Image (cartoon, rainbow over all chains, first blue to last red):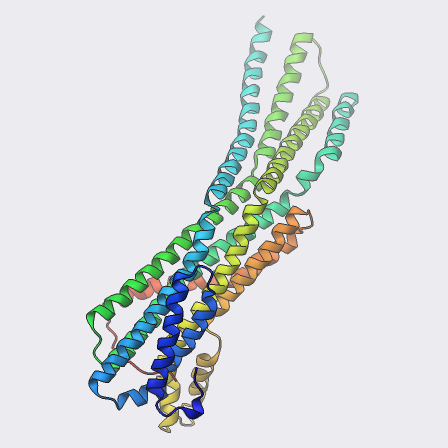
Length: 141
Length: 316
């Protein structure tokens, strides 16, 4: 951000900062090694200033065309921030997805162990039933 | 009595030899419960972060519209961004739910009643066997001895199954120790990102109310002795950390605590209290999310015909 003491026109100043930040952001979107958090922090700082009272009051005094251009540029910056935020989440989601198969396999393995354990008691129950029948037959033999 | 001792001795020996895995079952259960609470909280928080993002975006759109007409293509681009963002959050919810399913499967195995059922069945088998043996031999044994022998057999059987249960949990722990550690680290990263996004969004959503309820009345000298208290409360809630951010940060701490608990479970150092502390820490977040959900459901049903007017205002 520029030195506020030397700022004569906060609107054009903010727009220049926003354009520079946007260019950085576009580079970051194409670079997988870029630190998205750092870039997003800078962009958000600019965004807050662009929506701040000081800048907004200055913009109110501009012509309708300039106001529209400013609003459009501000929305464009919002869009870049939104896309970077989505990319930031997408990066983590991609890494999480890599563990999907292992996690699914773990769930299946645990369920199989549970089925086997339940099967053991059912098995014992079945034996008990057979012994019961044998017990009924023996007195008859 | 002699027969009973013959059965009791191997049973005690079995407990002494194989008790290690069995002793760890309560830790597995407590950890799995903490993990389940964590994934439930994160799934709910993701929904809230998504809603906060769309609301903040709406505030920005309205502020721009208050300044100048917004082109349809600009509006559509914002819609597309938000759709993509929500879709990504939805994918993350799927991933978190999958982790929740894992913890649930772990809890199901740790809390299985199979050892108890098996013990009952074995006891029953033993009773039947003793009866059949007597029939074959043509002898009779005192009823109390029969019962004691059958109970001992049931206990041994139950212990064996309990031990198998412990060994299965231990096997699972070793099979996926790296995967779970990695996922929990990614969950921590996710919550750090969600926290910063929620905080940035809250700046815009609260700004509108803050301007209307705090800045405007103050600047125009409308704060009187009668309204002073409520004005001060509004100002405080506008300046304090948003509830959602606090909740996401709590979940982030829980993600760190879960990683530590997982490592302790691996090194056999985890106590039930350690794991329960995570569940306790998350309880207010879950309660608050439930309350919010209920509140939203009731608002949807009661205010479907109500429309609200909005104005675009600047950040304070």
